[in-house]
Length: 123
Image (cartoon, rainbow, N blue to C red; front, side):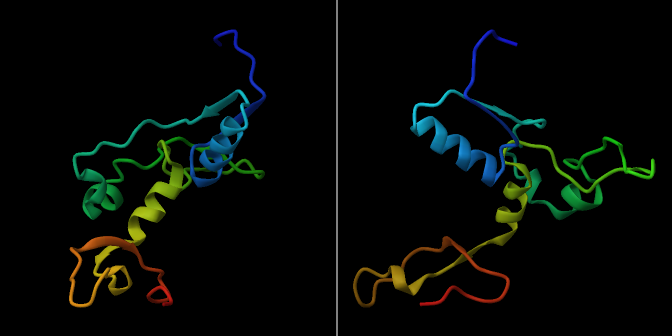
């Protein structure tokens, strides 16, 4: 590799790997964060259902072998941010959050708010 020594090697840049890497770096640890995939484009194509799910543009195409020697292609996405990036992105919905109103009568612009599948966030 590059001849450097690391305290920790983390495989995967999803929510777990990134959070652990961040905290270790803040504690002055030398961390190597490995990710199989690249950076997703910012051209809007990752927001298009046809492109992502029907065409499978960003989906893994590598074959794996299970313990019974059956070959399969897992439903995985390899990219910086991991599957977390896809799951979190599908949960962000534009909405108006009244609790962000700094004074009566003020209407905030539509902002991204996390909406859980089970319903809105509690007050």
